[in-house]
Length: 389
Ligand SMILES: *Cc1c(COP(=O)(O)O)cnc(C)c1O
Image 1 (cartoon, rainbow, N blue to C red):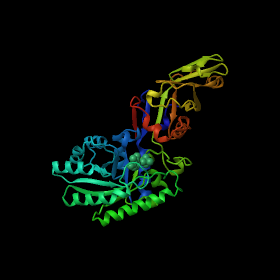
Image 2: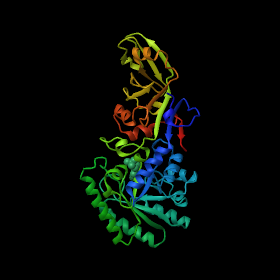
Image 3: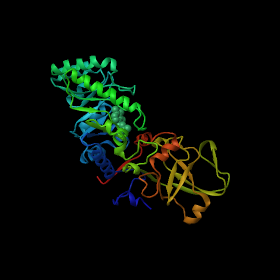
Image 4: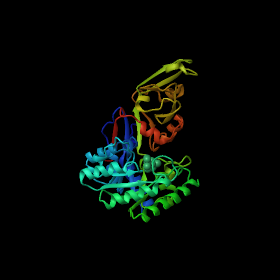
């Protein structure tokens, strides 16, 4: 039962590990590249590649046909450059303390909603270099991006900076609000607003090569959002952005398996309390299994009931999840059936499902959240191990 399906690799796994299948990443990227063509694909690798580990994922994504890397922060983009990634990288979330100078020096493309423009121009002036920018319009999400009201002024200022040689407007972009619900008409409204903003930019003399609007949900469900470039995060990790569709429904393969070993196993009588608060008491004489993962590892404390697969059976977590550990109730029958202790047996929280283990989505449901949050929160305390590098 020891993770045979995870990989043909034979070297032992760390006792607690997030195993990342880079073949799954490549498969998902190829699938998206084909789906969005002739638009190009940007692999969004912010937040340490959604918890999967940025360098191995970025390498696999570029190998499989992604042409761009996308991150939120300049610091994330600089880390990629320091790791010798030469592909175009876009960073889109800044503060007045962001290091625009270092970004321009490292040829990082910069998202610009308006206020950043003078800071980017100043960095370009100092460096005697042309900065590469992507102007962002708020087409309806209400987060970053210029308002439609300010857009005319922004494109005019950007055009002046372009003529002066300080910037090149490489792209125009925006972000979708409800693409995970493909039939919602707000996406149509966003497409119209985005198309109008694009036309306005052209009228101001700009000729950005790349218009980009779609995230994973747009990539998978709305071809009318693809434009020239698609920024996909969640889907490259093999996870579904839709409540009513699984990874398999979408032709995606989940890349992360979270596994450990049962660290303790013992028989207890009926009415035995389990974990802080003693919120759970055993219904009958039973066997408890201790799983050495907890909220410091990124397992949400609220996720009691989340599934753990041991010896081909899925057990819900009982009692409170603690900092380092949590408990499953194996039941009398399970122990009698296995005839032995399960100390040292593999325990899988989630994975691609090949061995019947639960999905990230089941953990998300147990925690009252979304799959994005479950994987991005797996903490650095859990070693990442790569298969099929
Ligand atoms: C995170 C992010 C994405 C990727 O979104 P997914 O839903 O993970 O595909 C794309 N664009 C922007 C601006 C983002 O912040």
